[in-house]
Length: 291
Image (cartoon, rainbow, N blue to C red):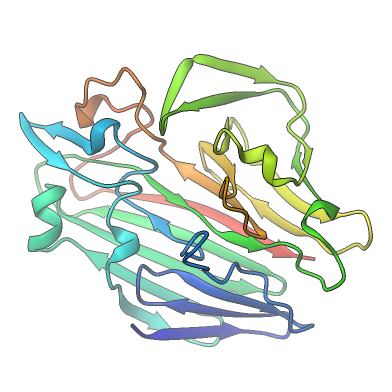
């Protein structure tokens, strides 16, 4: 595992080639803003989810009549990425298919993860290329950054608040035993809440998105905020571990989602799946601002 650093006057970002994962974000006041991966609670920082998001029903799918097994969130987070390019404020990491990935995911792909600093904002892009000359590929992708809360000394987890902008009615999707139950989908007028570990007793809060949405972590004792703009994501999940309690909250823009409870296991039918034509590319993007 190697690490690479991009930085400016506002932020210092450290990224590992293991999973192309952000492992540290330090602000100009020397505060660590990323969860530091306590293995007794949640042992990751900000994994990249590919080629699935969430869990497959019974951890398998079928493609062209062949069964494939795959664990939650896919394999990218456990693979070593190569470095395509790196400078002071931009880093591009890359993963391509190989013999091992083809055993569980029968597609020829190139995945680029791009991190770029612009003042107090970290811009993140995922570019997926279908390397096949003849076959479409099917995939999901997502982000899973865990933010350390409190991110200011002298404050507590319960001092913080999560809010979504714009304030509109959004469909909320229910998880049942790691899969989604669309029969229980509800339209929710107000998604804002005060942070408390009990909020996550039923797992993540998941919303369908029809427009770019800013998810803000703030508190009522100072003006500092973390603002995640979901960009062109189709869903967003808000999560923290429960019943184990860690001082973090994950804000997760997704281009895909877990299996439905009544899935037929066919990858081409999977709810929220992306289909990419031969030699075509797909770009997902979001950003995080630290004010």
